[in-house]
Image 1 (cartoon, helix red, strand yellow):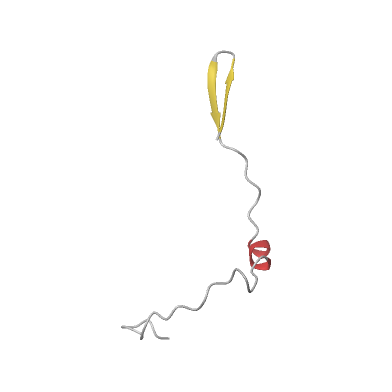
Image 2 (tube, rainbow, N blue to C red):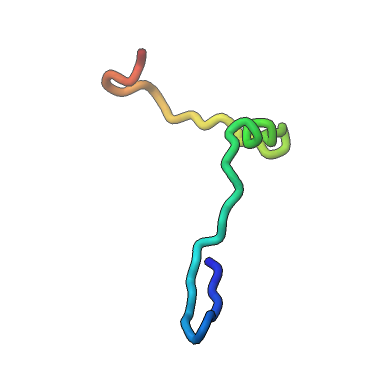
Length: 49
């Protein structure tokens, strides 16, 4: 949030964020920051395709 005073009034505005790029996020994945596989156990109910 950007907070400032203008003409005796307090102005609160959201900060403009850069546009999200899924491709850039995927490109940033490396062996050093990749999480290990998690074993969540056997299939239950209809979740196995």
